[in-house]
Image (cartoon, rainbow, N blue to C red):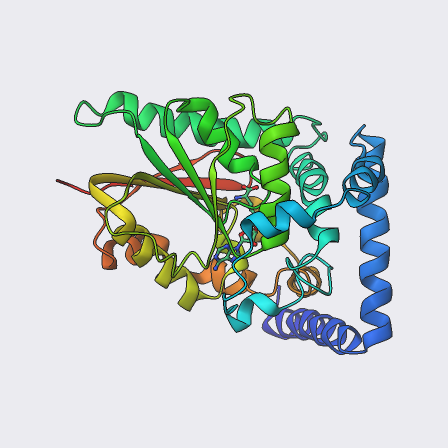
Length: 320
Ligand SMILES: C[S@@+](CC[C@H](N)C(=O)[O-])C[C@H]1O[C@@H](n2cnc3c(N)ncnc32)[C@H](O)[C@@H]1O
């Protein structure tokens, strides 16, 4: 390709991205685009046998007062970045629609990482992560099975219950900024088949960067699928907080999208712009130097494993 041809294809790509940005800046157009995207994902999910509307309706009809009162910290001040719209919900993570749809949405999104959609994609992803965590403890002769585990950004408990499955004797603490998600997590602990251990974790309504939990109180701090929702400043603060929460010899386990995966390496810029309208900090996440951030916070270099076509796991233990 000649330099002129390269320049002209780059400028048409820039033009497409700018055009998408301008269009998304027009509120009715952005709302229409989000509505279309949402209808498409619901249709695709239901075609795979994921009962999106039925499950959401059932949860939305419930009276959540008691669960919300049990988990909500009404003195909490939300960080500004969290008040953004996420995942095509105007209210971001702070509402009943996202809280009652996040489980089915996870099944739908994680079904699509392979050439052929897999209904069990979400379960596969979670197990591939927890297998790595379990192996880390099993293969390291200095480590005992963790007794106290924190799940940062626990959402409605899907990642918390997956950890409880591999460490059934541990006390689990799920921390999240959304009281709506935590209320559904509390309900799921008693009612969902996801919680095979049937015990109720502690649910803490707090920012993962300022949990106010005591220093050195956990053997394992884990986080899954939260970091792509964070600006870099919050990501760095959360890794420091994880270090503070861990006992000497404690382990940090991380799972999120893999910036090096084929999808991100080949995504057309205007599609990325569209994606950014639902994941506002994705570009900051993709540029975060995770290894250096861990080292700067006092962790050793992590072991990094690609655990799905789109995700990576990083695990590191603090030397005693
Ligand atoms: C995509 S969900 C992942 C939930 C769960 N860990 C899982 O694997 O399914 C991201 C979660 O992180 C939470 N979150 C985002 N920023 C946070 C922060 N600074 N502190 C605590 N939770 C946060 C959101 O409310 C949301 O529940």
